[in-house]
Amino acid sequence: MVLSFALLAVAHLDSSVSGKVTLPNGKPAGQAIVWFTGSARPKALPKAVVDQRDRTFIPHVSVVTVGTRVDFPNNDVIFHNVFTEFNSTKFDLGNYPKGTKRTQVFSQPGLAVIMCSIHPDMGAYIMVVDTPFYAIADKRGEYHIPSIPSGKYKVEVWHESGARASFEVNPGQKSQVDIPLHR
Image (tube, rainbow, N blue to C red; front, side, top):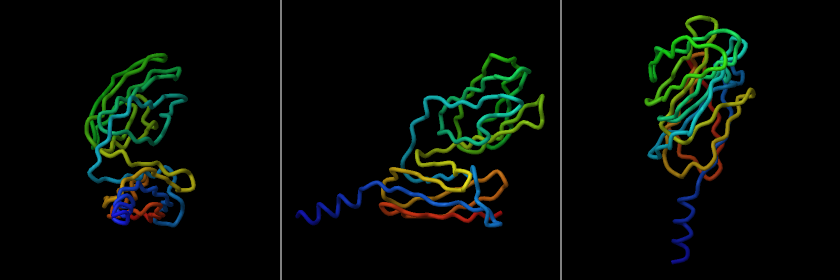
């Protein structure tokens, strides 16, 4: 009886998954987004922010969960217009000056390519995921996702170069999952 209880307890332990994401040329895929989809649904983040400073969106790459409200403050000395017409929630926040902000709720999973109609050289990416298990790889391509319940998951990986990966994994208590991207 004690033995079966111990086995049951081990089966429900959370996993920690770490690894390295590499581009097709073997170099680290900094700012690659890694997410594990399964049966767990996330809670919306209370709020996220994509700032505008020096004609740049900061951060350049971010991840939010479905239902998250994202603030787009303009902390630049010039007007900006934030919009997207791509895979996720489509919107156009109009022109607005320094010291003001606009907000958008991301209600669908997918990639939002954020642009400014006034400054075509400005761009950012927001990946909207329907899972609480995600990470952004650091400049060395390394990522870490804690507290993943045991089970079978689909791993999705995206990088702004267009390189991607998708496969199934069944992580153990501490798993190393290195991910080579392809086009």
